[in-house]
Image 1: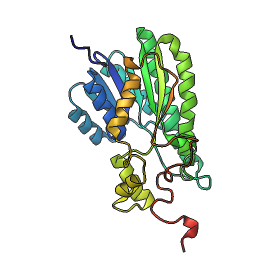
Image 2 (image 1 turned 120 degrees about the horizontal axis):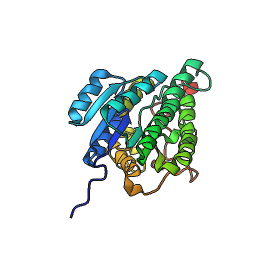
Image 3 (image 1 turned 90 degrees about the horizontal axis):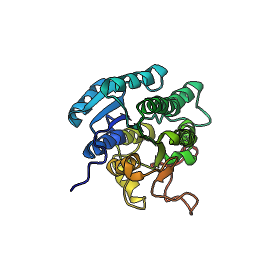
Image 4 (image 1 turned 135 degrees about the vertical axis):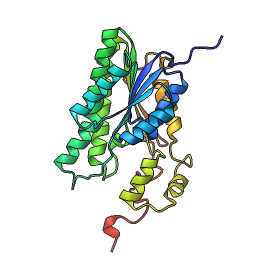
Length: 278
């Protein structure tokens, strides 16, 4: 007798689910038998197209997660879409650039509200719904290895990602009594269409930037969203057992073990440092 699919009969909320890593996670959840998914993004047309492409049982809600109203809209849409959100994947995030020298209050607010407050509020909302239903559940948040410090142009971004470790551990400790697991996966450099845009628009990357970057990495490539999604979905599944409060680096370097294999994304990768330019 074949085993029941790992997500059979379950429903999930996936922020950032219309593209990149979020979409790869939704595809893997559906392959694992997920019954219904609510994907969250900012672009209505892109989200509707993604939901239609992903198939029956997938719906989309447009929401600005930098606002409280946006988070509340997600939870309201989830209430309309299914009785209980068994899985929450916080994949949406902003990676706007800013350093110690030029990050203003508006940038701090935008990144901290989107990258920290929104996941925290969604965890609270989902936890209340799971507790009311007497159901176990799982939360997986996508962080970043930039939480260890990051490039100089990732001052508020790295700070926001570092905050997710405390958020994860605190929520995990509180919610374990209700069989709600909360974990954090911190990936390194990922090959996504948005990363291509960022490299070209913000770092003046050449057309062959991906090949040049891949040549400098130990595994000869950037992270594939599909392989990251497999790890995220394992952590969200019952196969992970009682694992909770874990902070998992998913990268091709080892913190504290010798020198990093390459500069952080964009830093001194495509040209000379600014102070060396004429």
